Amino acid sequence: MDSYKLELRGAVIKGDRLLLVREKGRKDWSIPGDSVEPGRSLRDSLSEIIADSTGLHIDVIRAIDVREADGDKVRITYLCKPISGKLRPGRGNKEVRWVELSKAAELPLSGPARDAVNILTSKFILFIRNRDLRRVIIGVPKGHVHKRIVMELVDGLIVLHEATVENLVRAFIEVEMHPFRRAIVLEGRELERRKEGYSKYQLLEVEMGDEEVEDLITGILGLDEGESED
Image (cartoon, rainbow, N blue to C red; front, top):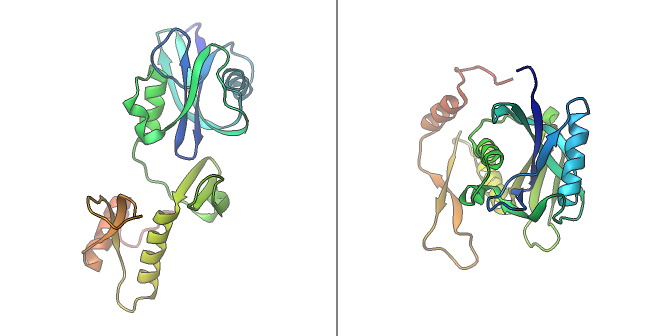
């Protein structure tokens, strides 16, 4: 490709929500971004574009997608997180909003937005060790009643809800302290009937023998017996 146009897009994530923008004259939703001239710092250019178009100042974490678009254009999409600013439409946008990532695909999306959603919601295996963590924050966000466990990774963010962590901790302690049990499987289920005040979705224990569970986890991780994932 002798000459090309360069387009930068930002998949801005806040907790479990994705920032979407609706550009003037369009009915679909997209992720913020614009074409830029090659030569300048890509991260600085994207930060400026997102600040001008949404009012948010962001931290550019890493590139999650690079692809050719429209024949003469290269589009780079970066994973980003907001660090300050007040959300408002600007620079060619008529609307800006946060959308739950799990529900974003239900909206009419532009090509860049749909590609980003597909990448961000695709299944993956992530091993987290102490060296992968910048810090862990536990507390209740303003305006909420339940705690969140926020794990800031070197190149990403994981947020766990209080109820999820409670289930995981109970299961871990059971395996750690029980004189005979070596493994437990919890399965996410949607409950039609539940006690008042309980979440519709629960992690419930599945009846499986220890060896079955050990075979299951070894197969999922693609490890041979005795092999480390390090």
